[in-house]
Amino acid sequence: MGRQLTLAQAESVLGACQAEATAVGQPMNIAVVDDGGNLVAFVSMDGTKLIGVDIAQKKALTAVYFQTDTRDLAALVQPGQPLFGIESTTGGRLVVFGGGVLLTDAGGAVTGGVGVSAGTVEEDHQVAEAGRRAYAG
Image 1 (cartoon, rainbow, N blue to C red):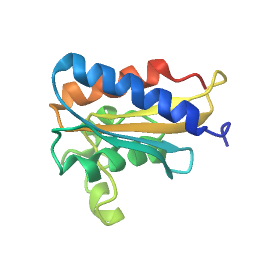
Image 2 (image 1 turned 30 degrees about the vertical axis):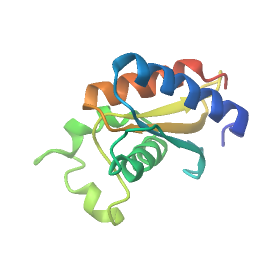
Image 3 (image 1 turned 60 degrees about the horizontal axis):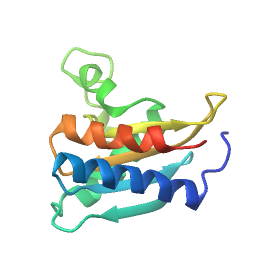
Image 4 (image 1 turned 90 degrees about the vertical axis):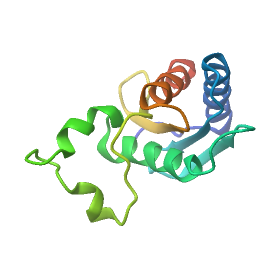
């Protein structure tokens, strides 16, 4: 188990994500979860899309569950691939397209995840990645 993700760290991640979302011109929903997938911090920026509230949290959870960025799962869930249909086995709790990134400490242990939703898949990943870069784990 990784080092505990603190609220201060999660707020730092949120701040970096918000700044990047502002830079790309797309208000976002941003979720930060701990290494167990539990929500630590969340923000829904003014003017964002409401559907992204749920999706952002699911992206963060998915990154932690699979211990990888969600964009890396997209190819694995296509028909004929090893994880095809995995989303249907968890009652809709997973999101397997870009916008969820893994947080790790300096030793590589998983400490949490960031999920972002409301832009394009590329924008979501870009904003989540800004949060990961700001993380001091």
